Image 1 (cartoon, one colour):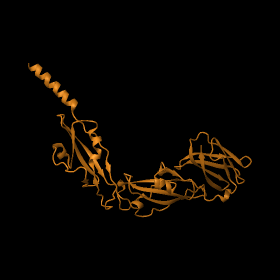
Image 2 (cartoon, helix red, strand yellow):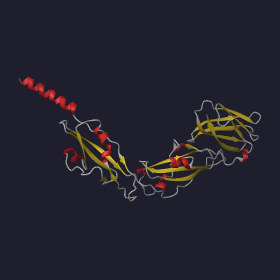
Image 3 (tube, helix red, strand yellow):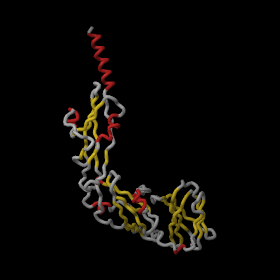
Image 4 (cartoon, rainbow, N blue to C red):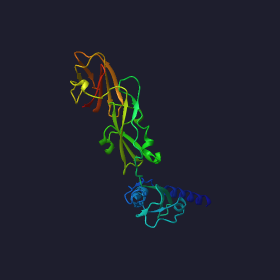
Length: 303
């Protein structure tokens, strides 16, 4: 008889464990600071994440609590989770998923976040590198003056991205992939920065600064007044022609992030140079041409 009872208890225990409710992990709820901007306080409907918390389970009740102890004990639930004013920023709310069918309970957390409103405390300095080689090209760390933009703001609350056009900075498109090792595509060159909270969904600020090195990369096109780069867009090979192509000519190719893809030194033939670009993927690039002290950078589209 004892053996039968022990067997039944074991079966019942396994059944309960298998049927134990499990709370899903919800995505944070992020609200922009539009109600009295700057106070970091908004009214949250915490129930919009209940589908993630319930995760397809039935016969359950969800309650929201200010502390883990309250959630574990099932006490002091917020009276109206559809209109909760955050008490901190961010605020961690403890969520209890309770079975109404005897399958226990589970606790998870829900983050309520009001992204900070950034401001540019000080216009960052331009960046100049004197390499002494006079080729107009250098590797720049675009992040070195972020502290000037931050001022008293906590660096761990914000992120910076960098772009080669103001439109990209505003739209958050085509960000420079590696801003700490960026190779300029013109000299001087304007860089556009986007400063935003870690949750880049609300307010942001943009600013610009110049990077420059010794030399004449892309300073002017008058040195190559008759320059032709064709076809553009290109499928396989480009032809570079100019009466100013003399002696050894350096050809460099960059992607939109400023990464140098290749550098070749060519001897012009009848004031013309051919470059094979068939291995490139489709997109926008920059080709830099340096010959006899003349320098220019051209935009190039690869089909």
